[in-house]
Length: 314
Image (cartoon, rainbow, N blue to C red; front, side):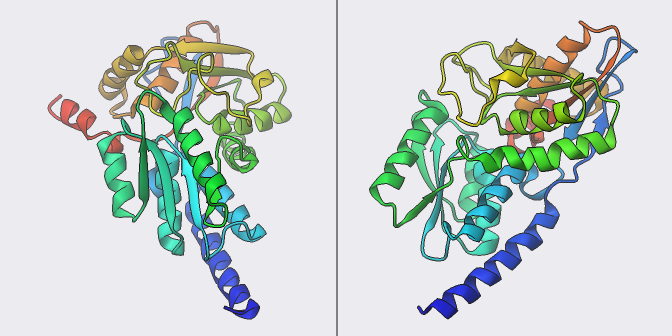
């Protein structure tokens, strides 16, 4: 393959990924009218399932893949590789499928069955890692693959890649400011920490009086896919711990109870991580006299068919 052919291919793939970018972001900010116990405290949430791949991770995946193609690190001759608990993997899979790029994902074996089905349907090669090692072990396996076959893989490493942060700094935060310029608080869970770090950084530049609260599981062994218990997990290199004025611990049980309550009060069937974010926002609301809290709904219940089955007769 000559250089001219390679350049034509790169131009074509760049054109296609930029078109895909039109399907990412611009998600609605929902006011949860029945979720705050204090009428002087409003709770709002970004409904991130309203974009390509159905989750907040579309933002980071798009920024990571676009930059890799533009820089030449990802091309027609290698494979996109990363570790993921599921949603970033699915976002990569949608992009890779449209662009004709091979994709390999190191995925903890306890990821939901629906996530695995979606990934397989989009042609993703899956390497399962131990449920007990979580995404930390998945990262180690991905790194070993990348080190052993550098010519074959582009290791995106979402836990280290600053484009993960940039996607939310330039996208999510700006959309929040435009939709609710009077917000007083931002609350979000910690996983790769890209959503939290990028969004909080931009919000605090906009208004340093905004209070930023981080959320994490209360225990190392928990049922909140994508979340990290930072005291016992490998802390992502992109995490800026100085941004959070406070950190709240959310139990898996509290998140699942929130799913039931939100379905009854708001007619929304949330995913566990979205419910955990809302539980954290509600806990914060109880501490305030007044305010406008914004949180993130990373995805919907669609990837958790057991939740739909559980609630369909309610």
